Structure formats: C-alpha cells, structure tokens
Image (cartoon, rainbow, N blue to C red; front, side, top):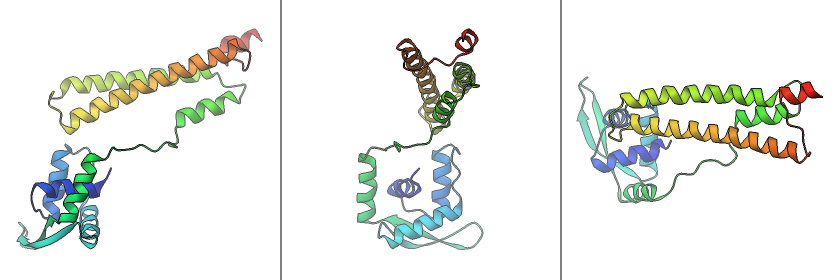
Length: 190
C-alpha cells in the first residue's frame, strides 16, 4: 500500500493537516488499514522534502496546538496524476506457503499430498463461506469494506483453482509415469 500516494490523493481534494489526512484515510478505507500519526507526519516530511507538498500555514487544533496545513505542489499534482494512470503490480517472486508445503511434501514418502491439498481446500472453502456471509451484510455500494470483501472472495476462489490445477498436474504426471501421484491409495497399493 502506498501511504505516500494515498496522502497525496487526499491532499488533491483540499489542503489538510496531518490529523485531517489520518482521519480522511481511515474514513475512506473504512478503518481497514491502520495509519498512525507517525506514518502520516514522516510521509508528509518526505513529501515536503521532495517538493510534492508545501506548508500553507497553521490551523488551531481542538487541543489548542497549531497544526501545519499542507497542499499539493505542481510536482505533487503530477505525481498523484501519474499514480492514477499507472497499474499496480504484484511481486512475481512472492513466497507462497501453500506452494512450499506441496513441493516439500512431494519429496517425502510420509506426506499424502492429496490429503494435504484437501485439508487446504476445506479451509479455503470455509473462508469463502465466511466472506460471502460478510458480503451479504455489506452495502452494495463500492466502499472499501465491500471492495476488500469482493477481493478476498476472488483471491480465495483463485486458491481453489490453484489446488485443482496442482491436482490435475499430479494426475497427469502419474499417468505419464514421470512421477507417482502421492495419495493414500497409491501408497496402500505399493
């Protein structure tokens, strides 16, 4: 998550203090992600150093202190515009514990890969049921809560498709005799 670009996007609406930005972020994201004041102020300091924002004055707070108000500079506006038009990428070399368990399990005779995958599949299906239950309680308007729940369901469905694909690969390998299908049935027969 890009805290910097999120804060710049919020500043695009109007000049704001760090507390207003923190509140705006939490409100916009339905409290899904915690953004502490230290993150906000450090990020704003770096943005100011980089010429993306400028202090426009101070505003009295409810505690009687003065808070600096910031606004986007031309460079900041260009930066946030570039962010809107740039796709978000996921790292290709992400460590995946399910992949690790399957690959490591294939090297062991005492691990039934099909049972391992079925256990994972049941767990993911339960998570899908819970997410669908949560979805039914959400407003159909695309809020952060709704979109995060939609994303979660689609990610979980992809996990199920992945497990199905691995099982098909194992079956193909067993049928071509390039590798045994590691299931409790094949071990009992041998």
